[in-house]
Length: 152
Image (tube, rainbow, N blue to C red):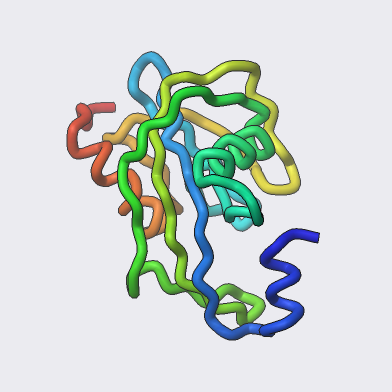
């Protein structure tokens, strides 16, 4: 059982502060890998921290689980937190996320999608981001994309 599930058994739906990490994985054309989640929305590979992990370890574990890829060197782009990152999910759980956003071009292996979490994995350039990219993920991409070409 994972850490958040154990916490939820004790505290129910009350708001929690949950740290996590996502990764902007860039190919040779500086396109970013996005994951179409099972709810249809698009986002970055990543997830919540488990006990004893560093944010970098969280990023690497989640990328491996969700894409089958292994990542090496990570550069911290930014950390996002505060009232804009409050969420109430469909089951009533409330949370404030604290998300470290990393960037890497150090990618090894072959893409292997986890069908339990993903409908698709695809690279996009900043000028052609998919419909269904939430405000949360758009904010994560903003710092990176403002310095990249916006042509398709």
